[in-house]
Image (cartoon, rainbow, N blue to C red; front, side, top):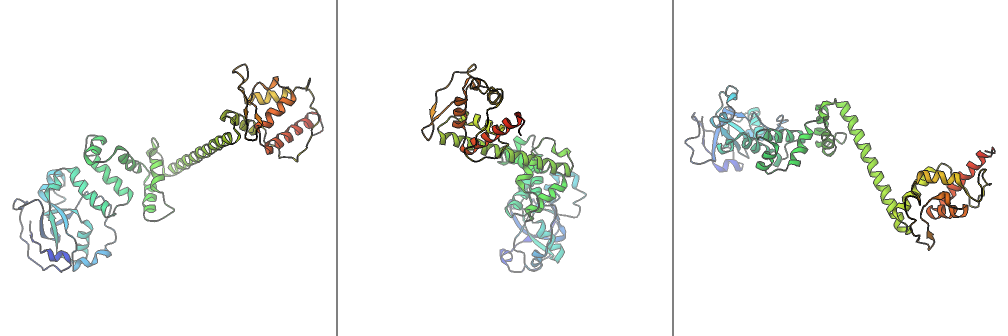
Length: 376
């Protein structure tokens, strides 16, 4: 292993002076956990567990051929192999493993820099989780990771603990934070690519919020990419329906407050209107001939239909007292409509409906009467 002490001025923009390195093993001659030394670029190995999937375009680091502006964090080969002994052959010929600065190392190789300033800190290699976390933190801080890379790095750290709960406690995360990242890895690779694209600025990609929503679906990882997209569409349609129902419920509450009626009364009126909303409103003053079958001033047919939609009756509950509406007109409570006279039934319906809905109901009733008398 080879190295020499670093002149701090070199890291502030002054080109590094070339120097010959000596080979040596381990870091036993270090006076502390953080040694800043120069190491031959050829004797450095990139982190095999780098959270980045690749180094990408290195043209932005071409100046490293002349000036190195930031040191690399490295651990000795000996310390690294205590954690990953199976990688000894892969790291043959290397003295140090780069933990942070893999792009800088790759740029030095590409643009011909002979040696790099490195901060040696074997305490970073006290555990696999610590080594992985050191690499993750630097990339997150520099915003070098896309959401999928970050999720993979987080789950690699979690895998070093007995449980996700233990990982959360040790790393200072929450279970929900871990679950959100895990959910992204349940998506088909094609959808993960869409997440990466969106994070890179492509609006046609898949946002993290939508991706996490889909990833939380049970057994979603067993579906194909097309099936996952179809499931997402189903989920979002359901979400829209729930929002619409919530808005309708809020409107019912507001109507109840405005009219001085109870929520139950307004809801019953809304249900009645929904059943009798097929005809268009007619002009004011429409009159309809008496329907066949109506006897003794009663309206059993209409009452039966209304009661079927609103089954609560005086047999089931006491008749509530009437309450005054916003206009001062009493708002009648819906009761057993078959027991009401025509005038009482008309008053009950009129009090429960808006003017437009009352016109619509009158139009619908007139149409029914004409149809039943053979004139429609």
